[in-house]
Image: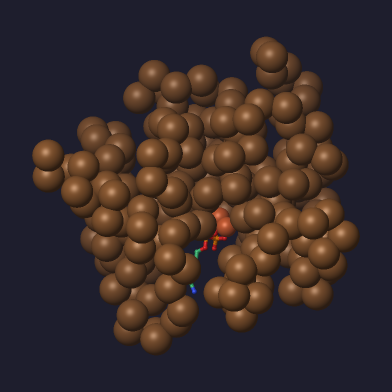
Length: 195
Ligand code: DGI
Ligand code: FE
Ligand code: FE
């Protein structure tokens, strides 16, 4: 399916309504950064823009709202997600992308689904959204941000490994629960990168 600019504008307006101001600014940052990464790495630019626009579409729902959507639509909630319901915004977001925003492209839905933890064997679009989320211009706090921003336009996998490494150490210092998928993704790409 070829995406029309009108569809993208409509979804941008819907995001402006449903997200708070800061999250909307972040969303635009991810959409534009993802578009640029797509240009650089020869991915579909409009798919990257749309996935970026929708990646956090469930972020401003309250935890009980997210849990309720999961329950109602038989979306499995694992133990880590039950304890840290913010993690669910990715799963719920991918569901809303399909059901509320009419996204049919599987790769876009999966890019939204996997944008927080990643997964082994990500597609190029999934990597682009994962990385754009971390490096978009409004992000300021992550260590090594300048290096990772540059790396993202050279080698997606190397940028991915660096982000996962920094995310895991950040979660360890916070003593936060680590979703097994975050660790699995890191191990997978670390091993692949060393082949
Ligand atoms: O929704 P955003 O804030 O834009 O970004 P995101 O969906 O990537 O979420 C980022 C946060 O998620 C960041 O603080 C790290 C955290 N995170 C990533 N993997 C895990 C995790 N948090 C926990 N508790 N466990 C994880 O495995
Ligand atoms: Fe997110
Ligand atoms: Fe985000």
